Length: 233
Ligand SMILES: NC(=O)c1ccc[n+]([C@@H]2O[C@H](COP(=O)([O-])OP(=O)(O)OC[C@H]3O[C@@H](n4cnc5c(N)ncnc54)[C@H](OP(=O)(O)O)[C@@H]3O)[C@@H](O)[C@H]2O)c1
Image 1: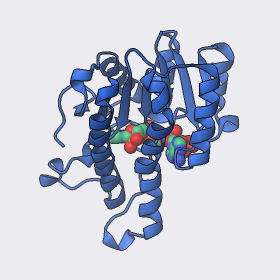
Image 2: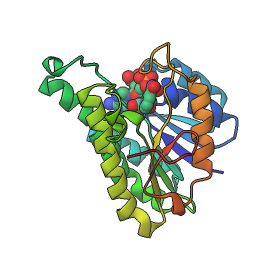
Image 3: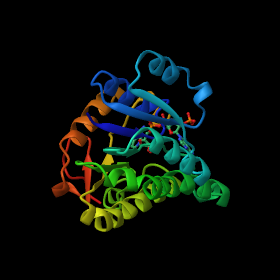
Image 4: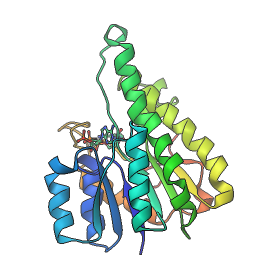
């Protein structure tokens, strides 16, 4: 049975994925910043022993390290690491930029996934079918910005940086058999995406989990949309 680790699992896309995975019997390490306040995750874990709630602030290396230690005491293997946690601070224009906001966004969206990869790659290497999935987004795409400008400076830049690190990790980890991809999950009705978005998070979760199930090493180094199509970098 597949073992997953999902960051930002307490709401939005992360929570939708956990809700779908619980029914498959997969083991899911569900990372959240505040387990004691994540009543939905705690409720699900109380009824399903395959759901394991772990404290995980991806921007804090101590938290990532402690989570890796705890998970290592319970399992030898992670098959799928989903770097899903993310933040998007809105900026209308250059005048809204502050170093603090840009750095905060970079810490969660770029440094976080790198720290997760650093500390969990050992468990991924022991899997027979290891996959590292960075939840990116269409706003990362330099090509898409040619026809319309959406998003914000800090968010778009952070996801573009995440995409570059995805490609670097794909190269570094290919010899270990680890497939590394970036995935655009679609525009979703979450706290981040807002009410007028295209997709329910459950629809996106279903597509993204289906895509992840079929990933092989032949897919490494790709940027994929939730429907499985190649996405422009
Ligand atoms: N929504 C969209 O339309 C859309 C489109 C393209 C890409 N994406 C990407 O999809 C992913 C999920 O987005 P979403 O819409 O589900 O967002 P969301 O509803 O805003 O949820 C974000 C999740 O990330 C967690 N998080 C934030 N900072 C964290 C940190 N430092 N450490 C650990 N967890 C942290 C949040 O936890 P707390 O509850 O503790 O804050 C929450 O669980 C993100 O990477 C986002 O960039 C979203």
